[in-house]
Structure formats: structure tokens, C-alpha cells
Length: 480
Image (cartoon, helix red, strand yellow):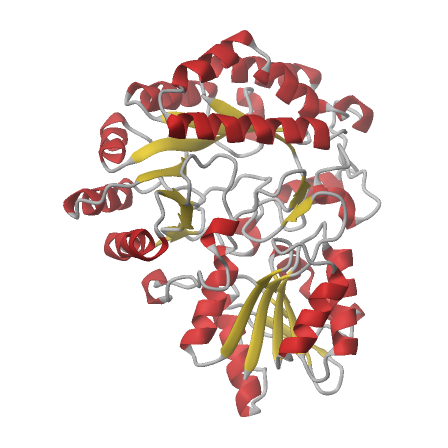
């Protein structure tokens, strides 16, 4: 039985970053994340004997007609499409066109938007057969097995679908995958590593992988823990993670690893296990990860460096202790300064992110954040405007307080400027805030000198050049 797993087209200016992206958005440069969860899904389906094709239509620059023709040519029995909130109008249009062109195809949506709006999507769109809620690897497998056998879908947990009478059926929740080691390695045949080299990579060919899923923290703006992967933290074994690293070096000739876990550093035993395994096997590979400022310590950072780590990306989010508390980040300016100082002390590069525009934001907290960012000492940072994605506490709060300033979901794509007002700032007050933040930060003499001092070899120069290009694309692309 033929199956397609796809990141569908996202027409319009720039590039739609949707798959494996924590805040789906448009961007000016084609620096897309490796769609690892689609790659896991195709791998699971192939393992179960299905004839599977993975398609990233955004990466392949496909418009909707191109994509529809490709689906028609392959003629699958099942099509799994990852959709998102800002692209949903295009996704719905794409699904409708596919249903017209491909006779008998079973079409299912997956992703955070689907998890939140599953009933509404099925109720309103008779050309969408099902919505997969939460993690989608095993639900996709079970759909294909049931359809192949001619069985009912009623026993597939995590699925909302339309039955033969046209009734929307909501099956029970599916438990998140507990043993991550049982998953096959992601499919890197249909999704090529070289097509996904992000701006903050310094290697010539970087392989993205994950060592865990889920995040136990409760940040109000964070989409994935509340929709796809839950707040239940689950880990792969150190041996399996390092097996994958060895395979990527041997078969894909990678020269760098990026651990795309929500919080790679959260469990010290896991981090040390992976590092010790890398060292014991004599693997020489540079890698970087995302971390949390209040869980790192000097001993573990030293071990990470010995094992090849060269950079950590932290979620700073605000320079205001009050804002950090209100967004339930539960970190402080002091813990950020400590983490940055420790990380740089052991010789690692520090990156991080800041968010503007949550409900209690004011002129004072905006200034406080920007001033703090410049003095923090991080090697590079990114700025984002808070986006109230359905499924987050931020969305519910903004909706209940009448702060949403949105006409349709496409305005969540990051190019429309502020789509919420805060309790203290109007939408107009927030206009241009990201552009201004980037210009102010990256033209600061302190930051310019800090970055120039870091360039010691070709890889450093490559990463800085990519970073400059990415920053400039953001300055000129995000006009609002």
C-alpha cells in the first residue's frame, strides 16, 4: 500500500518554516529545520512494510499545483500532511485540491493546529478524513494498517475522524511514546541532510537528531508541550543516541551534530551518559544543543566540551524578572548571568533567544530586556515577537483578556508585526520592535567586538557569516 508523508506547500513571499519548528513562521532565507518527526514517521511506516514517500514541498519550492501533481503521480492510498496555524488556509486548499485529483486517497492532518482544532477541522471540511492528535508516528502506522486490512478506525487512539455516516468520532487520547529506543532511526533518504543547514550551524554538513521528547516546564508561550509532545520528559538511551551519531558520521559524512531537544541539559545523568559514551568510543565530532540556564553546572559543561560540544543555545526570553515569573519561565536574570559566565568560562559559545509582547509587557520591560541582552555577554541572540498559538496558555490568556488583534490565522506567520496588544502597549506601540531590536543589538560596539574576537578558524568564520546573513534577512524581511 502506497503512503505519502508530507510537509505541504506554503505559498507566498519567502519560505514557510513549518515542520519541526516550534513557532511556524515565514522567513526570508531558506534555512529550514530538518523535518525529523516526518522522517520518524516515514521510517516507522517503511519498517511496517508500506511503500512510503516523504515529500517536503517547502524545501522543494513546490506550489500547490506542483504538489497535487506529485501526489497524483504516486497515487497513494494514504496521505499524511503536517499543517500549522498560520498556513492552515493553504493547507485546507491543498487538501481540497488533492481530494478532487486523487481518487480514494485517505487524507489525514497532523501537527499542533490539528491537535487543538481536530473536531472543528473534521466538522467543517468533508475532504479531510482524519486529524492525528499529539505524536503522529504510531497513529499514522495504525491508520495504514487498519485501512490495509479493511478494519474500522474506532480503536486507534489519538485519532479524530469521520465515520461512514458522516459523524465526527473522537477516539481516546494516545499515550505518548514511552520507549523512544524502539523507534527506528529517522528516514534520511527522502529527507536529505544537506537540504537542511540552518544559519547557526558552523559545520559544512550538520546532522540534526534528538535524544529526548517532552518538556516538564510550563512556559505560557510554548506550543509543543501542550499539543504534540506533552510535559512528560522521555529520554533515549545514551548508547542508541551515540549509535546514531556514528551512523551519521559513517554513512552521511557529517562533521557536526545539532541536538534539537527542547532541553538537552535538563537531565545531568543523561547528558553525562551521552558525553561519556562519545568519549569512550573515541568519536571526534563537534556538536551543539539547547539548554536551560538554571540546570547547568561547571563540571557537566567541562564534560560536554571534552565530548565535542562547542555551543549551547539558551532560552533567556526576558531581561525582566517580573516578566520571567509571569511567563512561568521560572528563571532569573541572575541565573542567566551565571549560566552565560560558566558556559563561556569553559570555552563554549553561547546563543539565546528573547521574546517581546507577552500580556504584561511594557515600555519599561522592553527596554530592560534589550539593555540586559547587550550586557549579558552571549555571543549571539535572536529576538521574536510573542505569537499566541492555539494550545498555549498565552493564547487563552490573550483571548480571554481581549488582547488578540488578529483577523485570520495567516497573521501568525511572523510577517504581520504585532498581532496582540499587551495590557500596557498597543499594537502600534509594538510595531517594528523586532527590527529595532536586531539593529540596536547587532550594531552595538560591544557585540561587534565580541563577535570579531571569536573568529579563530574557518568554521568560526563560516558560522559568523551565516549569522550575519540571517540577521540581515530578518531586518529587511520583517518590515513590521
